[in-house]
Length: 276
Image (cartoon, rainbow, N blue to C red):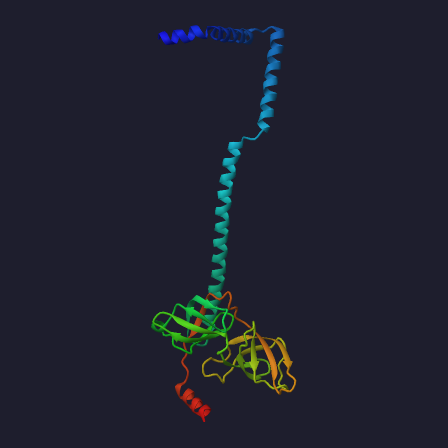
């Protein structure tokens, strides 16, 4: 208590000044004199103008918090849009593949691509299906767009597929419009070639090329691609026919394995004929 009295005694001038200011303000507020009313009106107007001017100055802390909330909301919305876009594309792919499965005249098994090798001379893909699912070597691999390749080796739950972009890949093919036959092969480019086609054969740019009935591995009628160019080599009796594949190996994510087995009797007979 003595300490409080000492503080009041030390600051008594300020306490007195404050008390007098409060009394003056009370007297002014209760006085209806014209001059006092004018001062009061001017004071209220001045304070209002100051408040209005200060209201234009942004609250830095409040804006910072608001920006942080908006940034987080933007990130959440962007993530949601990305997931919705991926889900839509996935839905379209699956619907397209389901349509292919329903239209396919042969039994097919859906598979996911779990690994790719696209920068080699012998490019391959790895699938998440294997012998336990009925997959065997030499079974064709297709997508909703067309021919992809064939199975070359299997384990219980995985299979490795040989792509058309592989130096060892071969497939009997024909031009759908004219019926011209040839063999599909790859030279390391972004296209494949239809080989063994004579200069006089009717092949034009834009022709669709499919697997032919002469193949023992691939069912007939699987789309391979479109003729993108033809040329003649000097001194050769054959045409150079370029084909742009229907399947896009770079974006390949889901495929079908065609569950067909080569005719062993035909394979044996053809191998004996070729070995003579």
